[in-house]
Image (cartoon, rainbow, N blue to C red):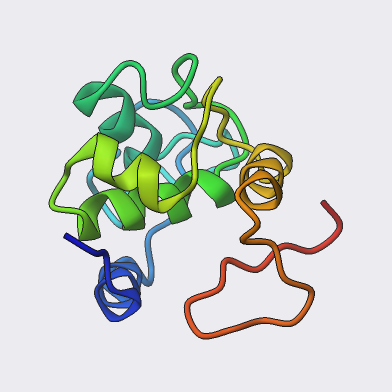
Length: 124
């Protein structure tokens, strides 16, 4: 089953207002425990769903790419293998922009001009 960009966008739009957390508290609250600790429900959910989604837990790390992965995971019906396939993951599974760029390039899915549904990167 294909993952449609409109579903990924719908999932992402539902997260508008979610604040990064100072610690591992209130991860499910959109506004509770705000801070700059790089703690999110996104990294927790991916790790809890499949400890092999990444090569290790990612809470406490920059989470921009983790958020995109989580949106794809949700749009994939919380099927981690389906989400990894949609993201062109080949392993070891990393959560950073640089890792995502390498996956897209290896799959021939890297483009210098955005297309509908593109994952956008700047300065990676």
